[in-house]
Image (cartoon, rainbow, N blue to C red; front, top):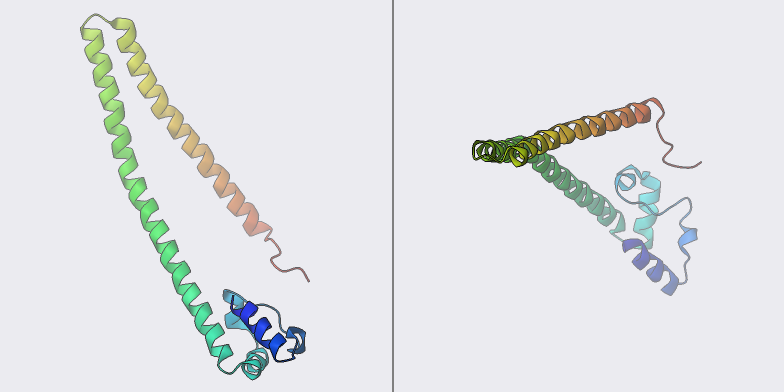
Length: 151
């Protein structure tokens, strides 16, 4: 948005964005790495613009860090609570199956127990496979980093 406004301002004042030699739209981490000459030219185009760009990048970085912290805390909470809930659900199904067996409903009781245990095993196996896949992808990305900027 800021660069759109800068372009509008430059167009109204008879200048082109390309006249600020060597500049490219910057965002996120790039704004903090912009060379001083580029920021100086932004200030020449609109006084105080370089400070606004840096402030915007700092706010974006802080916002991103807060989001990442929230996601990590939520995932940690889920990883702590999910096994207990799974245990409660499984034991309820096993208890219900046992109760059915004691009341003479052997087939239904056995089906409830087997289904509960099979579901628990399925979730465990699926989670391990997914975890292994993610670890392999991270190891592959580490071994062969993606090129972020085409040159």
